[in-house]
Amino acid sequence: MAEPNIDGKLAEEFAVPAHVEEVKERMTEFARCHASEGRRVVVITSGGTKVPLESRTVRFLDNFSSGRRGASSAEYFIEAGYAVIFLHRHRSLYPYTRMFSTINMLDALQLRRDSGEEVVVNQEVLPNISKVLKRYQEVKERRLLLPIEFSALSEYLHLLKATAQALSTIGSKAMFYLAAAVSDFYIPASEMPEHKIQSSNGPLQLSLNMVPKILSPLVKDWAPQAFVISFKLETDKSILLDKAKKALDTYRHQAVVANVLDTRRGYVVVVTRDTQVELSLTDEDEKRDVEIEERIVSNLTSAHQRFIDQQKE
Amino acid sequence: MAEPNIDGKLAEEFAVPAHVEEVKERMTEFARCHASEGRRVVVITSGGTKVPLESRTVRFLDNFSSGRRGASSAEYFIEAGYAVIFLHRHRSLYPYTRMFSTINMLDALQLRRDSGEEVVVNQEVLPNISKVLKRYQEVKERRLLLPIEFSALSEYLHLLKATAQALSTIGSKAMFYLAAAVSDFYIPASEMPEHKIQSSNGPLQLSLNMVPKILSPLVKDWAPQAFVISFKLETDKSILLDKAKKALDTYRHQAVVANVLDTRRGYVVVVTRDTQVELSLTDEDEKRDVEIEERIVSNLTSAHQRFIDQQKE
Image (cartoon, rainbow over all chains, first blue to last red; front, side):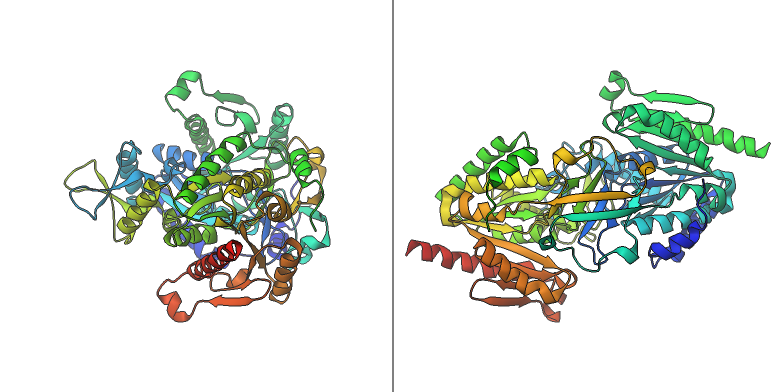
């Protein structure tokens, strides 16, 4: 069920980032420009949100998420012809750059022998670098990727609202791919201590409120014509599909990508009101470094096309 | 006061990382080797610790820390002739590499015009790269930096204990520079739910226990001859020095580096039992990109030398 006055609650209990209007303008322009060239636009949210426990924050609650799924999906959406707004957690994995995330960059660089000061990439360490760099530069030049950063939950909520409003102008050509791991709980500003919680006061009791379900106004009010995908991650497989269906009933959006923590890189179920499609990687796929995100994006871009066609009828 | 049976508590309530014995052997060898060449060894802990709320972890409590102070200090300790064990949070800032942390590496690379596949660093984007790379490679070749990673609090605690035991063999030549932002609170394994906490159950009440004060056995039992520095970060300046002095009284170690969240990059106080030395950066220093860690390390390496000399007397 939609909560009443979610806009009011957002404004009251979650600090509005100073740059939200400026970001909204950039997104509106980005969407307008690409839609006018016949391109669809996907908003990918990626990474975890930070929930401060103190207003001068030393401690915070976080969600496990490297941002791998979002970063990888962004690349496949671009391959599929989309322009991408990448709303991601500061320092989480980033499209194209993500391939260096497991190495120390200095281990991949070397001084050229014939010229003491020139520094080159050792392509034995990074065999795909020239291909990836070319693709990255092309994407940058064609302005196909608009990166927007958040850290705190409050930034995420306000920026997502601004994104939805910015994309409402392109109707069903907009897709929301909500892969971020958003906290379900937070401490309202009014109940937050200003200073660092002292351990000398003994064991800590925390009481957290529930974060308003932003999917509800997003679907109903902010971007009612858009194609909206949410993600459901559970650790307990037995409750997963029920929770996915329940989310579709509640929020009336188009699909849920359901996955289990331990197997999330090789198996997901795309759940819609009428269908349930299992996507998985075979051993052969994994040997060839195929990523499940390629399959997810392929499934969803087709569904998005059908959705757009239906709207036209 | 030292808690009784802290070793027992560590073993019971905090999962022992599988590789701890292997890491301990590497550290013992590292310390032995450098000490035999007349080098002092500093253990730098750096970054925040993760405290899981579920045993199949989706959510966790974290501490604000980029790892900047630890990474930067490691470089200055190496300049001062130390060998460094860098016990740091996975993906936190790293010595030498830290200078790229604010840029996307692909923005600093370019394809060579005369050779389509060679990738070089654009030194307009990274003006210091060749100098930093040379220094990094030299440090690597001379094996002056031993990196050890942790993520969870339990890993940090067990690895720090192993480090202290490994370094007990070199007596007063060992320094502990405990800059990591370690959680004061945790949920014992026995009280942790296995699966992801469900938001449908309503608001969340968390009850966290206090983390055993590991500084106590470190100073008393594990590395009783070492030179030990702890850090105290507060947001409230008025309680800072009292807390630093109280820590020295309680744990009987050599110094506390006291700092306030907002001003930590430009001002610290090094507190010992008899002295209180303020270190700060002038506007002129900041213009020249002087880092406060250079001053901190300079202060502490001198103090460490005096400490070693006193032990000899």
